[in-house]
Length: 105
Image (tube, rainbow, N blue to C red; front, top):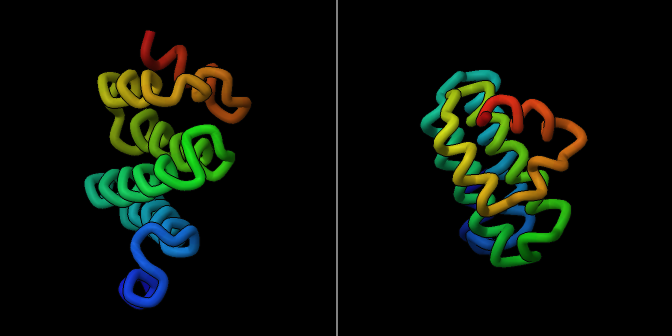
């Protein structure tokens, strides 16, 4: 599905980015392949930052998913700190802000 979406709609199309993000979740939760999940979340986040932009809800959701990976799946305080520098809204996130804050302190 991803290859077809990339070919037909392009790598930066919102539907393609949504597919990438969903697949990253599968790699993280189902397969526990955190390296692949991080690669895919990062790809989706990079695309979302370009369009619709850093402040859009879809971009924030993508950043939160990557933060959850750094918090829970493949714990990395350093990577989470860097992500929060790029996306400070994560500390105010109702679904993880307090957890992220306590993890990196």
